[in-house]
View 1 (cartoon, rainbow, N blue to C red):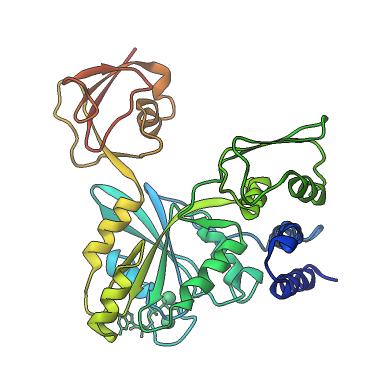
View 2: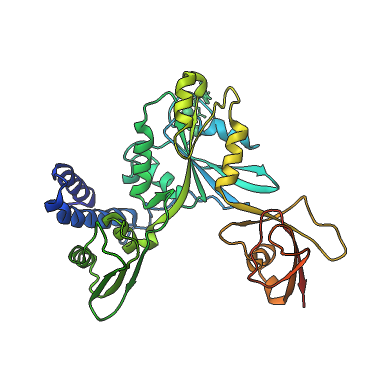
Length: 368
Ligand SMILES: Nc1nc2c(ncn2[C@@H]2O[C@H](COP(=O)(O)OP(=O)(O)OP(=O)(O)O)[C@@H](O)[C@H]2O)c(=O)[nH]1
Ligand SMILES: [K+]
Ligand SMILES: [Mg+2]
Protein backbone atom coordinates (compact mmCIF):
# COMPACT_ATOMS: atom_id res chain seq x y z
CA UNK A 1 0.00 0.00 0.00
CA UNK A 2 1.29 3.45 -0.88
CA UNK A 3 1.20 6.27 1.65
CA UNK A 4 -1.82 7.91 0.02
CA UNK A 5 -3.79 4.64 0.30
CA UNK A 6 -2.70 4.20 3.91
CA UNK A 7 -3.85 7.72 4.69
CA UNK A 8 -7.13 7.10 2.95
CA UNK A 9 -7.78 3.84 4.77
CA UNK A 10 -7.12 5.48 8.18
CA UNK A 11 -9.37 8.39 7.25
CA UNK A 12 -12.11 5.94 6.28
CA UNK A 13 -11.69 4.02 9.52
CA UNK A 14 -11.86 7.26 11.50
CA UNK A 15 -15.00 8.27 9.64
CA UNK A 16 -16.83 5.04 10.40
CA UNK A 17 -15.67 4.70 14.02
CA UNK A 18 -18.22 6.12 16.43
CA UNK A 19 -16.76 8.56 18.91
CA UNK A 20 -17.30 7.47 22.50
CA UNK A 21 -15.38 6.58 25.65
CA UNK A 22 -14.75 3.01 24.45
CA UNK A 23 -13.26 4.04 21.09
CA UNK A 24 -11.39 7.13 22.31
CA UNK A 25 -8.16 5.21 22.77
CA UNK A 26 -8.27 3.52 19.35
CA UNK A 27 -9.10 6.85 17.65
CA UNK A 28 -6.13 8.46 19.39
CA UNK A 29 -3.76 5.82 18.01
CA UNK A 30 -5.21 6.20 14.51
CA UNK A 31 -4.70 9.96 14.64
CA UNK A 32 -1.07 9.45 15.65
CA UNK A 33 -0.52 7.14 12.67
CA UNK A 34 -2.30 9.53 10.31
CA UNK A 35 -0.03 12.40 11.34
CA UNK A 36 3.01 10.18 10.81
CA UNK A 37 1.99 9.22 7.25
CA UNK A 38 1.07 12.81 6.37
CA UNK A 39 4.53 13.84 7.47
CA UNK A 40 6.11 11.15 5.27
CA UNK A 41 4.09 12.42 2.35
CA UNK A 42 5.65 15.85 2.75
CA UNK A 43 9.17 14.49 2.77
CA UNK A 44 10.98 13.78 -0.48
CA UNK A 45 11.01 10.11 -1.50
CA UNK A 46 14.39 8.52 -0.75
CA UNK A 47 16.69 8.81 -3.73
CA UNK A 48 14.58 11.38 -5.56
CA UNK A 49 16.02 14.78 -6.24
CA UNK A 50 12.70 16.57 -6.21
CA UNK A 51 11.29 17.67 -2.88
CA UNK A 52 7.51 17.78 -3.00
CA UNK A 53 7.27 19.51 0.38
CA UNK A 54 9.04 22.62 -0.82
CA UNK A 55 7.39 25.98 -1.37
CA UNK A 56 7.99 28.47 -4.15
CA UNK A 57 11.40 30.01 -3.81
CA UNK A 58 10.84 33.67 -3.33
CA UNK A 59 13.41 35.68 -1.46
CA UNK A 60 12.03 36.93 1.81
CA UNK A 61 12.24 40.70 1.91
CA UNK A 62 11.05 43.53 4.10
CA UNK A 63 9.94 43.31 7.70
CA UNK A 64 7.30 40.57 7.44
CA UNK A 65 5.67 38.20 4.98
CA UNK A 66 1.94 37.75 4.32
CA UNK A 67 0.69 34.85 2.14
CA UNK A 68 -2.56 35.10 0.17
CA UNK A 69 -4.28 31.72 0.33
CA UNK A 70 -7.59 30.90 -1.29
CA UNK A 71 -9.60 29.03 -3.89
CA UNK A 72 -9.17 30.05 -7.55
CA UNK A 73 -10.73 33.35 -8.64
CA UNK A 74 -11.58 34.72 -5.21
CA UNK A 75 -9.59 37.87 -6.02
CA UNK A 76 -6.09 37.24 -4.60
CA UNK A 77 -4.30 38.85 -7.55
CA UNK A 78 -6.84 41.68 -7.62
CA UNK A 79 -5.98 42.41 -3.98
CA UNK A 80 -2.22 42.25 -4.56
CA UNK A 81 -2.56 44.70 -7.43
CA UNK A 82 -4.67 46.97 -5.21
CA UNK A 83 -2.44 47.21 -2.13
CA UNK A 84 1.01 46.99 -3.75
CA UNK A 85 2.65 48.44 -6.85
CA UNK A 86 3.00 44.95 -8.34
CA UNK A 87 0.55 43.93 -11.05
CA UNK A 88 -0.42 40.27 -11.00
CA UNK A 89 -2.59 38.92 -13.81
CA UNK A 90 -6.32 39.06 -13.09
CA UNK A 91 -8.95 37.08 -15.01
CA UNK A 92 -12.32 35.47 -14.50
CA UNK A 93 -11.07 31.92 -15.00
CA UNK A 94 -9.55 29.57 -12.40
CA UNK A 95 -5.77 29.17 -12.07
CA UNK A 96 -4.84 32.46 -13.71
CA UNK A 97 -1.90 32.76 -11.33
CA UNK A 98 0.53 29.86 -11.75
CA UNK A 99 3.41 30.89 -9.58
CA UNK A 100 4.26 33.02 -6.60
CA UNK A 101 4.13 36.78 -7.21
CA UNK A 102 5.62 39.02 -4.50
CA UNK A 103 4.62 42.63 -3.89
CA UNK A 104 5.46 45.17 -1.21
CA UNK A 105 2.90 46.86 1.02
CA UNK A 106 4.23 49.99 2.69
CA UNK A 107 2.65 50.71 6.04
CA UNK A 108 3.85 52.89 8.92
CA UNK A 109 7.34 53.00 7.44
CA UNK A 110 7.55 49.21 7.35
CA UNK A 111 7.78 47.05 4.25
CA UNK A 112 5.45 44.06 4.27
CA UNK A 113 5.97 41.43 1.61
CA UNK A 114 2.65 40.21 0.17
CA UNK A 115 2.80 36.91 -1.72
CA UNK A 116 0.14 36.30 -4.34
CA UNK A 117 -0.15 32.54 -4.88
CA UNK A 118 -1.98 30.15 -7.20
CA UNK A 119 -5.45 29.15 -6.07
CA UNK A 120 -5.74 25.87 -4.19
CA UNK A 121 -8.50 23.28 -4.17
CA UNK A 122 -9.49 20.42 -1.91
CA UNK A 123 -6.71 17.83 -1.90
CA UNK A 124 -3.99 20.47 -2.38
CA UNK A 125 -1.90 19.15 0.51
CA UNK A 126 -1.85 15.70 -1.11
CA UNK A 127 -0.40 17.13 -4.28
CA UNK A 128 -3.38 18.26 -6.33
CA UNK A 129 -2.31 21.01 -8.73
CA UNK A 130 0.32 23.36 -7.38
CA UNK A 131 -1.42 22.89 -4.06
CA UNK A 132 1.33 21.37 -2.04
CA UNK A 133 3.80 24.04 -3.12
CA UNK A 134 1.29 26.72 -2.18
CA UNK A 135 0.53 25.36 1.26
CA UNK A 136 4.23 24.84 1.92
CA UNK A 137 4.86 28.47 1.01
CA UNK A 138 2.17 29.49 3.50
CA UNK A 139 4.35 27.89 6.18
CA UNK A 140 6.99 30.57 5.64
CA UNK A 141 4.55 33.43 6.25
CA UNK A 142 4.18 35.56 9.37
CA UNK A 143 0.49 35.93 8.59
CA UNK A 144 -1.86 33.90 6.40
CA UNK A 145 -4.39 36.12 4.71
CA UNK A 146 -7.10 33.69 3.72
CA UNK A 147 -9.08 35.19 0.86
CA UNK A 148 -12.64 33.93 0.69
CA UNK A 149 -15.50 34.64 -1.67
CA UNK A 150 -18.41 36.23 0.23
CA UNK A 151 -20.84 34.82 -2.32
CA UNK A 152 -19.76 31.21 -1.67
CA UNK A 153 -20.94 28.84 1.11
CA UNK A 154 -19.28 28.81 4.54
CA UNK A 155 -17.56 25.44 4.08
CA UNK A 156 -14.90 26.98 1.78
CA UNK A 157 -13.10 28.21 4.86
CA UNK A 158 -13.07 24.79 6.55
CA UNK A 159 -11.79 23.07 3.43
CA UNK A 160 -8.86 25.49 3.21
CA UNK A 161 -8.14 25.20 6.92
CA UNK A 162 -7.95 21.44 6.58
CA UNK A 163 -5.50 21.69 3.69
CA UNK A 164 -3.22 23.95 5.72
CA UNK A 165 -3.54 21.75 8.77
CA UNK A 166 -2.52 18.72 6.72
CA UNK A 167 0.92 20.25 6.12
CA UNK A 168 1.38 21.12 9.79
CA UNK A 169 0.15 24.71 9.86
CA UNK A 170 -1.83 25.63 12.97
CA UNK A 171 -3.88 28.79 12.55
CA UNK A 172 -4.54 31.22 15.41
CA UNK A 173 -3.32 28.72 17.95
CA UNK A 174 -0.57 28.66 20.58
CA UNK A 175 1.78 25.66 20.79
CA UNK A 176 0.25 23.10 23.23
CA UNK A 177 1.38 23.43 26.82
CA UNK A 178 3.16 20.10 27.04
CA UNK A 179 6.80 19.62 27.93
CA UNK A 180 8.26 16.84 25.78
CA UNK A 181 11.82 15.62 25.66
CA UNK A 182 13.14 12.49 23.95
CA UNK A 183 15.74 10.64 26.02
CA UNK A 184 18.09 7.74 25.43
CA UNK A 185 17.13 5.67 28.50
CA UNK A 186 14.58 5.48 31.32
CA UNK A 187 11.39 4.62 29.44
CA UNK A 188 8.48 7.02 29.00
CA UNK A 189 7.86 9.16 32.08
CA UNK A 190 4.38 10.63 31.96
CA UNK A 191 3.19 13.36 34.33
CA UNK A 192 0.34 15.85 34.39
CA UNK A 193 0.06 18.89 36.65
CA UNK A 194 -3.66 18.22 36.90
CA UNK A 195 -5.15 15.07 35.35
CA UNK A 196 -5.56 15.62 31.60
CA UNK A 197 -9.18 15.29 30.45
CA UNK A 198 -8.45 13.85 27.02
CA UNK A 199 -5.09 12.12 27.43
CA UNK A 200 -3.90 9.18 29.47
CA UNK A 201 -0.55 7.53 30.06
CA UNK A 202 -1.29 4.32 28.16
CA UNK A 203 -2.33 6.21 25.03
CA UNK A 204 0.71 8.49 25.22
CA UNK A 205 3.04 5.50 25.56
CA UNK A 206 1.46 3.69 22.61
CA UNK A 207 1.43 6.69 20.30
CA UNK A 208 5.11 7.19 21.10
CA UNK A 209 5.78 3.51 20.39
CA UNK A 210 4.26 3.97 16.93
CA UNK A 211 6.83 6.75 16.41
CA UNK A 212 9.53 4.38 17.70
CA UNK A 213 10.13 6.61 20.73
CA UNK A 214 10.66 4.45 23.82
CA UNK A 215 12.31 6.92 26.18
CA UNK A 216 10.93 10.38 26.84
CA UNK A 217 9.71 12.85 29.46
CA UNK A 218 6.13 14.04 28.98
CA UNK A 219 4.71 16.69 31.29
CA UNK A 220 1.19 17.89 30.54
CA UNK A 221 0.77 21.40 31.93
CA UNK A 222 -2.77 22.05 30.72
CA UNK A 223 -5.68 19.70 31.50
CA UNK A 224 -7.46 20.61 28.25
CA UNK A 225 -4.81 19.37 25.80
CA UNK A 226 -6.06 16.85 23.27
CA UNK A 227 -4.57 13.85 21.50
CA UNK A 228 -4.08 16.10 18.46
CA UNK A 229 -2.10 18.52 20.61
CA UNK A 230 0.14 15.73 21.87
CA UNK A 231 0.74 14.50 18.29
CA UNK A 232 1.65 18.07 17.33
CA UNK A 233 4.19 18.17 20.14
CA UNK A 234 5.85 14.94 18.93
CA UNK A 235 6.02 16.49 15.45
CA UNK A 236 6.97 19.95 16.72
CA UNK A 237 9.73 20.51 14.15
CA UNK A 238 7.11 20.22 11.38
CA UNK A 239 4.49 22.46 12.95
CA UNK A 240 4.09 26.19 12.30
CA UNK A 241 1.84 28.29 14.49
CA UNK A 242 0.70 31.18 12.30
CA UNK A 243 -1.90 33.88 12.69
CA UNK A 244 -4.68 33.90 10.12
CA UNK A 245 -6.94 36.72 9.06
CA UNK A 246 -10.04 35.65 7.12
CA UNK A 247 -10.72 38.19 4.39
CA UNK A 248 -14.05 37.95 2.56
CA UNK A 249 -13.90 39.59 -0.87
CA UNK A 250 -16.70 40.48 -3.34
CA UNK A 251 -19.06 41.88 -0.70
CA UNK A 252 -20.45 44.08 -3.50
CA UNK A 253 -22.25 40.95 -4.67
CA UNK A 254 -24.08 40.02 -1.43
CA UNK A 255 -26.75 41.64 0.76
CA UNK A 256 -25.90 44.04 3.58
CA UNK A 257 -27.29 41.53 6.10
CA UNK A 258 -24.88 38.90 4.81
CA UNK A 259 -21.94 41.32 4.98
CA UNK A 260 -22.88 42.10 8.56
CA UNK A 261 -23.09 38.42 9.48
CA UNK A 262 -19.68 37.61 7.97
CA UNK A 263 -17.97 40.64 9.49
CA UNK A 264 -18.98 39.51 12.99
CA UNK A 265 -17.10 36.22 12.76
CA UNK A 266 -13.83 36.06 14.71
CA UNK A 267 -10.63 37.14 12.91
CA UNK A 268 -12.65 38.18 9.88
CA UNK A 269 -12.74 41.25 7.69
CA UNK A 270 -14.84 42.09 4.64
CA UNK A 271 -13.75 43.83 1.42
CA UNK A 272 -14.60 44.48 -2.19
CA UNK A 273 -11.51 45.01 -4.29
CA UNK A 274 -13.47 46.08 -7.34
CA UNK A 275 -15.63 48.59 -5.41
CA UNK A 276 -12.73 49.72 -3.18
CA UNK A 277 -14.54 48.84 0.07
CA UNK A 278 -12.80 47.95 3.33
CA UNK A 279 -9.26 48.05 1.91
CA UNK A 280 -7.87 50.55 4.42
CA UNK A 281 -9.38 48.59 7.32
CA UNK A 282 -7.84 45.44 5.94
CA UNK A 283 -4.38 47.01 5.79
CA UNK A 284 -4.80 48.20 9.40
CA UNK A 285 -5.78 44.70 10.45
CA UNK A 286 -2.75 43.22 8.68
CA UNK A 287 -0.54 45.66 10.57
CA UNK A 288 -2.15 44.79 13.93
CA UNK A 289 -1.97 41.04 13.33
CA UNK A 290 1.71 41.18 12.43
CA UNK A 291 2.45 42.55 15.92
CA UNK A 292 5.12 44.93 14.71
CA UNK A 293 6.64 47.81 16.62
CA UNK A 294 8.25 50.91 15.11
CA UNK A 295 11.42 52.06 16.78
CA UNK A 296 12.89 55.42 15.77
CA UNK A 297 16.63 55.40 16.14
CA UNK A 298 18.51 58.54 17.01
CA UNK A 299 22.16 59.40 16.58
CA UNK A 300 23.76 61.57 19.25
CA UNK A 301 23.33 65.24 18.38
CA UNK A 302 20.76 64.53 15.65
CA UNK A 303 16.96 64.40 15.56
CA UNK A 304 15.40 60.91 15.55
CA UNK A 305 14.85 59.25 12.17
CA UNK A 306 11.05 59.27 11.96
CA UNK A 307 11.00 58.29 8.28
CA UNK A 308 12.64 54.88 8.28
CA UNK A 309 11.77 53.16 11.57
CA UNK A 310 13.47 49.97 12.66
CA UNK A 311 10.72 47.36 12.87
CA UNK A 312 10.72 44.59 15.50
CA UNK A 313 8.08 42.04 16.51
CA UNK A 314 6.23 42.31 19.82
CA UNK A 315 7.60 38.91 20.79
CA UNK A 316 11.18 40.03 20.07
CA UNK A 317 11.28 43.54 21.41
CA UNK A 318 14.39 43.84 23.58
CA UNK A 319 17.10 46.41 22.93
CA UNK A 320 19.19 43.39 21.89
CA UNK A 321 16.61 42.60 19.18
CA UNK A 322 16.69 46.25 18.06
CA UNK A 323 20.50 46.05 17.80
CA UNK A 324 20.20 42.84 15.74
CA UNK A 325 17.83 44.56 13.33
CA UNK A 326 20.30 47.40 12.78
CA UNK A 327 23.45 45.36 12.31
CA UNK A 328 24.64 41.84 13.16
CA UNK A 329 27.76 43.20 14.91
CA UNK A 330 26.07 46.04 16.74
CA UNK A 331 25.49 44.45 20.12
CA UNK A 332 29.15 43.45 20.43
CA UNK A 333 30.04 47.14 20.71
CA UNK A 334 27.03 47.98 22.89
CA UNK A 335 27.58 50.15 26.00
CA UNK A 336 24.04 51.27 26.87
CA UNK A 337 20.90 52.59 25.22
CA UNK A 338 18.94 55.78 25.85
CA UNK A 339 15.21 55.29 25.46
CA UNK A 340 12.46 57.91 25.13
CA UNK A 341 8.81 56.92 25.01
CA UNK A 342 6.21 54.64 26.57
CA UNK A 343 8.66 51.95 27.74
CA UNK A 344 10.90 54.48 29.52
CA UNK A 345 10.33 55.26 33.22
CA UNK A 346 11.80 58.72 32.65
CA UNK A 347 13.04 60.38 29.49
CA UNK A 348 15.54 59.34 28.47
CA UNK A 349 16.03 56.14 30.45
CA UNK A 350 19.46 54.52 30.38
CA UNK A 351 18.89 50.84 29.56
CA UNK A 352 20.70 47.55 29.00
CA UNK A 353 20.23 44.92 26.29
CA UNK A 354 17.27 43.25 28.04
CA UNK A 355 15.05 46.36 28.20
CA UNK A 356 11.79 45.88 26.27
CA UNK A 357 10.71 48.66 23.93
CA UNK A 358 7.21 49.83 22.97
CA UNK A 359 5.72 51.03 19.69
CA UNK A 360 7.20 54.38 18.57
CA UNK A 361 9.91 54.56 21.23
CA UNK A 362 12.99 56.57 20.31
CA UNK A 363 16.23 54.67 20.92
CA UNK A 364 19.79 55.89 20.88
CA UNK A 365 22.45 53.17 21.11
CA UNK A 366 25.73 54.20 22.70
CA UNK A 367 28.65 52.04 21.66
CA UNK A 368 32.13 51.44 23.03
N1 LIG B 1 -17.69 41.23 -7.95
C1 LIG B 1 -16.40 41.26 -7.66
N2 LIG B 1 -15.51 40.64 -8.46
C2 LIG B 1 -14.20 40.70 -8.14
C3 LIG B 1 -13.76 41.40 -6.98
N3 LIG B 1 -12.42 41.26 -6.92
C4 LIG B 1 -12.02 40.52 -7.98
N4 LIG B 1 -13.10 40.18 -8.73
C5 LIG B 1 -13.10 39.39 -9.98
O1 LIG B 1 -12.84 38.03 -9.68
C6 LIG B 1 -12.16 37.41 -10.78
C7 LIG B 1 -10.91 36.69 -10.29
O2 LIG B 1 -9.97 37.63 -9.84
P1 LIG B 1 -8.44 37.26 -9.64
O3 LIG B 1 -7.79 38.40 -8.94
O4 LIG B 1 -7.84 36.79 -10.90
O5 LIG B 1 -8.58 36.01 -8.65
P2 LIG B 1 -7.43 35.05 -8.08
O6 LIG B 1 -7.87 34.63 -6.71
O7 LIG B 1 -6.09 35.67 -8.18
O8 LIG B 1 -7.54 33.81 -9.09
P3 LIG B 1 -6.47 32.65 -9.45
O9 LIG B 1 -5.14 33.29 -9.69
O10 LIG B 1 -7.03 32.05 -10.69
O11 LIG B 1 -6.47 31.72 -8.29
C8 LIG B 1 -11.85 38.53 -11.77
O12 LIG B 1 -12.80 38.50 -12.80
C9 LIG B 1 -11.99 39.80 -10.93
O13 LIG B 1 -12.33 40.91 -11.71
C10 LIG B 1 -14.73 42.06 -6.18
O14 LIG B 1 -14.44 42.71 -5.16
N5 LIG B 1 -16.04 41.94 -6.56
K1 LIG C 1 -8.64 34.07 -11.65
MG1 LIG D 1 -4.43 35.07 -9.17
